[in-house]
Image (cartoon, rainbow, N blue to C red; front, side, top):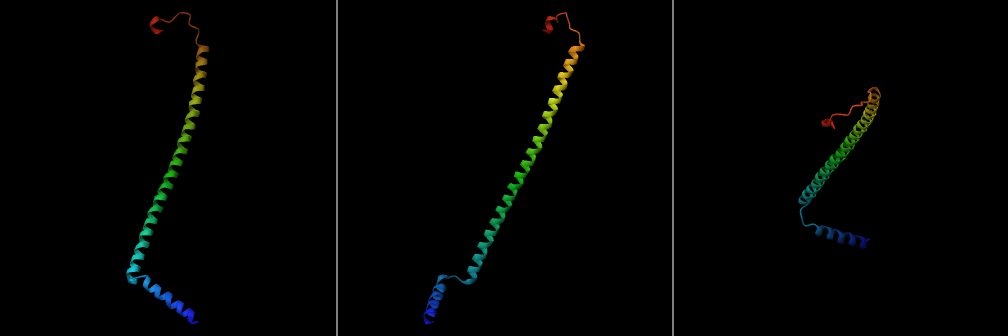
Length: 106
């Protein structure tokens, strides 16, 4: 038992010489360090949230533009088909012109 008390006394003596600053100064330093860490963490968290929101916005916008492009492509295809149909009707209804076109129209 005396050996354990001697070891405890030696470790306490080493601990007391380990810090030379006042406990209040150490508490202030550690508190300040913790506050800086928390502030840095909160800033990074906000930046991460901004990037996630921006990514979601871009994805949503891209999807909307893709849908608009698909609708426009379908409309173009329908109008081209209608144009072809109207040209064939016109060629059937219009009699063939036998007279050549004037030179200035060629």
